[in-house]
Length: 479
Image (cartoon, rainbow, N blue to C red; front, side, top):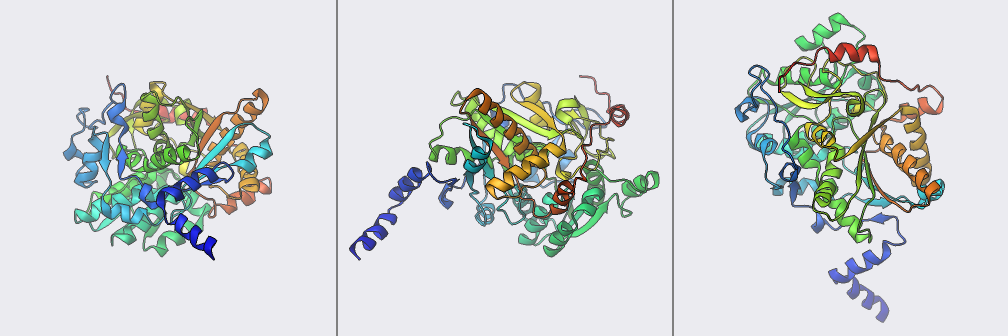
């Protein structure tokens, strides 16, 4: 009895509890944080860049876009964040209260995968699949819904590929009593029907894109009734509807500065967790990239530490071979959507007309890369590779059969790149520290796994013919 009372008293001491947690990190695979460790601020990397990123342009005047040019789509606070150069922006208490439903998210040491690969590398993965929507997307959906509701907006429209962003916004809108309408890329709408059910459970209306609801969708269907859709096309449809109603705004799940800003809670937590695990440096940080929010959310706080000389990780983005905007695209001003409704953004692009092949990583089927990430890549502050989907699914099986989590098709790209690096460490004997972004689970993607297991998945490459046609449509902007 005496010992049991003593143990209770010991665990009542916060400092002692933290010490015991640190000691156990050497043998446990999971590194957790307390609720009090939840970041209170988002990190804005633009404050620390060696060169400012090129500004978005008004497509009519080709002059830098002014704040009033975004007022029809976004609330004022998000516009301020989009253009801010402040290093940190405080997270509202109302947003933190919702974050606490699932944050801080866990960091795992992938010891079983390490043993499977017989590598001396230490592999960690930051797991965002514990959110209500099953991915990292609520990190920005919640503040976007909050700021819109605060400004009196009644409805949000958006696009979604695999459905993770649409699910996240539907969840956030249900929290803040907003109507939500989602245009889901037709290829993913057909592949992942339960994502639609998930969004509708939270009260959203979901349409396949291209749809007959908008002029943009009707035009595309007239040209190609079997069009698989694209994120750029779905964005056009959602924007077209939003601008027709003063009580409606548009919400974007990736690409823009304020979206990547909100995702930095991932990297801020990860830095604390690595320190708690006794890791003072990271050799390689790996994340998948479609529009860039998951990757930027993890990488940006690490780049801050790199800029300050505190660590020197290689930052590696991984994209699908069928939609390789960083590795095969051009760095140019282009529209963020197919119809040309958005401002012109300087980004690595395959051309806003490009319709990627219907790979199973639907969230990575976007023609352009986030301007901030494109700028980092152009400055050679990070690197990028492209991997075909069969190798990614094979890596996913290795991961699932060792670590237990079935990953979404998107982060399988980061897993495949991590396995490549771990195998290089096995050959060289280097005990590198590798951190990867596991941005969501694959519970709604089992049809994709079924096709892979039955040998039906093919590697879809980047089509030079389709690319040449799309590249020809990129606007000419003298710089």
